[in-house]
Structures are given as structure tokens and as C-alpha cells.
Length: 303
Image (cartoon, rainbow, N blue to C red; front, side, top):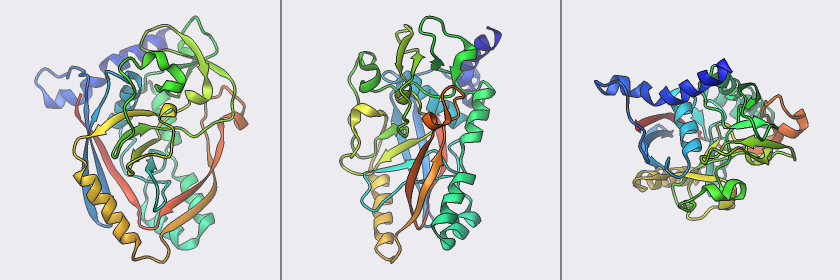
């Protein structure tokens, strides 16, 4: 159990890393509502989006997002699933490489699919988990004993379809600017054990507990996705900059004959080493903006 205690230590101290530079005491105390800043670049302009996160309602999701942020996984990514009428922008899975992106854009669908598969953050994500940088919340099979050796590199789904009894203060509404943790549907019908905030280990569907690093920003007044099936864990502080950004994207697209790029049958894997490959893999058809929407950085502004 040595590794298990090490993971607990990481979980307990991860909030101190930014605080060392920020305070003489060397550690920030966790608050109910941490803050983050997402810097988005589009067509040469940068837009700063400030968010309030809801640790009091979704502690595991917020901790996971902050751990990924602090370890730099969310820097220099692209919005990888997009249409002009999209209600949500999907990101968190693929890095941005200007030269390679432009070459793929000019070469067609097959090249764009290859770009996404070769620029996936999956390997970096798994390296963070193996290095004990991510606090585990999902485990294989055993409903009565949590063992470090059984930990999976996925995130418990803190939404009503999964652990309704844990959402004590009511789910956040999915309004314009909402920040949501997301996962692509898996076919697996297997059960896993999860550790809700109550501390009682329960059995739940793997498909509801297989999120890794993907998140989405809602850019429509409403979302086409059921709110019970994802976690809205952050709200934008001031929607003016996001409105400015979405209007810039919309205006730019009106000048183009080709507005989006296609990448069909992109392999999206979730390497849990638990279930068969067919159960943890999904193939998705992506639509990317011709001019990339780049997540330049995500930074914690308040713990």
C-alpha cells in the first residue's frame, strides 16, 4: 500500500505548488470556489476567460482539472470538435503545432486525421497518472476495498445519471460559457468501484466514469447534450470576452468558402488496461475550424 499512501500525499499537497511562489507561507488553502484563467487565441487575437469553479459541489472533477492545469496538460491545445452552429467547443485532447496543422489543413481529411492521432495528449496524460500526479477516484471491480494497484487513470462522473445522491446542492445549469467535463461514450457494460465524496465505495458503470482530460466550453444559449450526463463544474465570471471571441469566429467564417475541416474515424482510446480494447476505444468524426481556435494556456488564479 506504499504507492496508495503516496497518491494520498500528492492529493493533499498539490494545492501548494502555486502557493509557494505566491505566498510567504508557501501553501494556499483550498476554497469552495477556485478560479482559473483560460487564454484563447484566434486569428492572431488573444481572449482571456476567467472562471469560477465549484469545488463545493464537484470536488473530484475540480481537483482533477486543477491537477491537469498545474501539470501543464492544458497548454497549447486546439478546439478539436467544432461546427459553425455548435453549442459547445470541445478541447483537452490534442496539441497545436502550427506548421503541422497548416500542412494537414492543406492536404485533406486523411492528413487531418493523422494530425489528431499523432498530436493526442493521451500519452502525456497517462505519464502524469503513472507518476502519481493525478488523484485516483475510479478502481477496478472491488466494491469493498480501494487498492492502489486497482486504480484507473479515469475520473468519477459527478453528474446526476451517475451519482445523483452526491449532488447535494443541485446540478449547475448549462448556460453560455459553462465549463463541462466530458467523455466520449464507450461500449463497455462493465462495473467499476468509485469513491464519491461520502467516502462510501460504490459500484457504477465504467462508461460514466471514463473521463480523462476532455472538456468543453458552451458557446450557445443552450446545449444539445443532456445536462444529467456531464458535469458543469465551472461558470464564466464575465461573458463579454467569450461573446467577443464567438463573434470574431462567426465573422471570420463568413469570409471563407471552406469553413471547417473534416477528420473522419479518428481513434479515441482510453488505455485503462482493464477492459478489452473494443470496450475502451471510440472512433469519432471531427469537424475542426479552418482557422484554429487555440487554448494557449489554462492557469489557476485562486485555489
